[in-house]
Image (cartoon, rainbow, N blue to C red):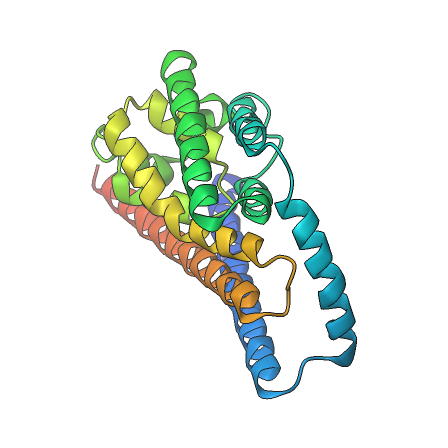
Length: 253
């Protein structure tokens, strides 16, 4: 009979299987939403949806009429800053809410500023106080550490993948790269580049949230699920490659 793997070797495999499962689930959900979108384009809208859409349009007009907008923008930025210590709202929630109130370009600019504020504060917090539990987890995981550190300089490609994938918290990842003393300017532009597809999709969904069966709502949803699923599968591949590489060099040593 084959020997049982030690618990330390089984845990990374279980985590990779979990990422793989989530990735396949996201891709399957994207396919399901795409099929729904095609069905809605082929057939007439559901009769009951006409009445519901009129009610939603009235609610949309009430939300768009909210005043004053500067106070709302400051409140969103305050929530991003608060997320440095207590993650009250996720990026998706803030993007959806702001896009429901503000025009899409203003909502995108507001959330880009909020993300920059949050990640900068978390970066400096990690630089001064360490990466917290996430950093301790990295130190205990040799394959993950080799991927992130890249000879101590920090890996921008891994950072981009982490930003593309919604399951990794922005604050925790920012503290990690702050603890590694990765260059702040590079950290911010890679962060914004990695988050851009999700942010744009969230903004489009939020601007069409009062018409949830429209292509403007469902198409970005397909994009989010597809990018998230592919990112998770790519992350699983990276972790598998790092594990094999670590094992090979460990055996040579």
